[in-house]
Image (tube, rainbow, N blue to C red):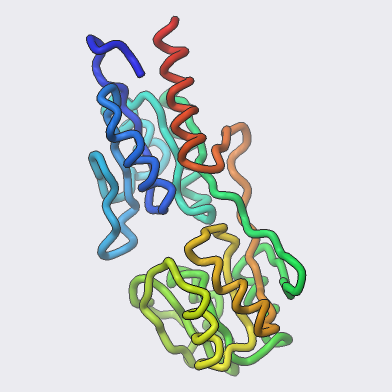
Length: 259
């Protein structure tokens, strides 16, 4: 991607997603690149990507901008979860402050199809308010960090699936299933049957690895409460998959080398 005599271009990936790991693997084999992935550290045993890895926060956008400058970062790719909106906004501020090009890598969202019974909402609070009118046995797949939004629903029973065990506050009537995707359609069908689920709650993460639950819910006639994604910061270009992000990096550094 650049002349062999030049030092490697430094790419920082804000990671934690499957797409981030795929992107790091694709870029780490490029001899003209130095690839670092930053993980927030919220998962006890994260899947580590190729290249260098740092774990932990930056101390806000000012701290992140300082890190970008101190480590001579040439490009920043926000490949975090679609609902990590605080991280995305901090990244936009940091990139603007440090004058580092920024790209958001975001998988496409889910789209309802024939037979789906979706109730789209703007927040976890709105999702919680919707539940009592829909059912009593809830499959909650929005992650352990947002359980406090459902803690007041004492009359409902929840099956909560997350990678790590949740901490209070959370719903009092709750069973925890510790698991990590990808999940199979047969497995999701069995889970809905075994636990007599009558409502599914999910965020529009868009991941193929966790989409089987939507098909299982459609087949079983189970309504789905879908939390819409928060918007990205204004003006940030978006790639839909790692291949698009690789092409963006190549164009960026090719243009820089031609100047």
